[in-house]
Image (tube, rainbow, N blue to C red; front, side, top):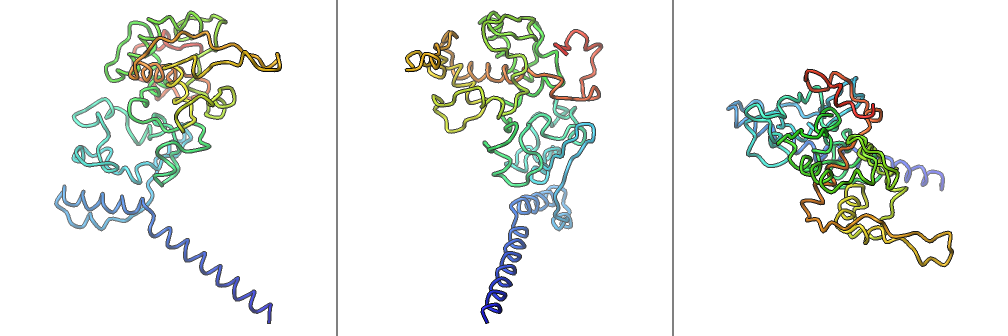
Length: 306
């Protein structure tokens, strides 16, 4: 008798689990976004049949980059100029309409995470936006995405080069030069290699884990313990974030406060320097194929420390 009861309960639990799985799949949030997009598209083009288009996960994959991006499953209108004034996730990608510079970056070729990083394989908002634990690299959005331009555009870090499309990065580069960051930090992109402070030359290519293992987040105000937050708060108040421990009971544990000056930076300046530091990439880590580089006469003068 007991055997039959256990069997019945187990069968019920299996059926329940299967039911929950089917329900979760049928009510997935990405399906709602895609259905809404097709309804909007049907109105734009005047074809009611489009509203009934098949709902499916869409994926961009390029074997040269060896990465899968499913972002367009929800962001279905990124390459549709008619959706410029629609809200997220339906809106056109900024600077795409009217032959903006993003239109020169084919989504079929580049995908999304080559610039935005984050998790391109997930199809839920929680797993793709905001701070997602355990990701090698967090999502870059807004002005922070300019830190990824240097994966291909090495020339952006050259002195005397200014691109208005990457205005925050350009401001950060100018600040780094004006403040003399290369006098203490090795920044090979600037041709500096002093041993006085940690090297910054490949900071943007570090994983979140690699950064966390050697940085103390105990003084960070934000709940988001990620690289860009630490860098931003550090630029705002270096002594607060790296106070050292000169009075530790064990002499072996005593460390001095950071020697980095407090430049009394504004939030905009601290963000610009953060974007700049994250733009310092190691080409050997990024492994971007030459075919993705911009078409300029020669890259020889911009191949920093490769």
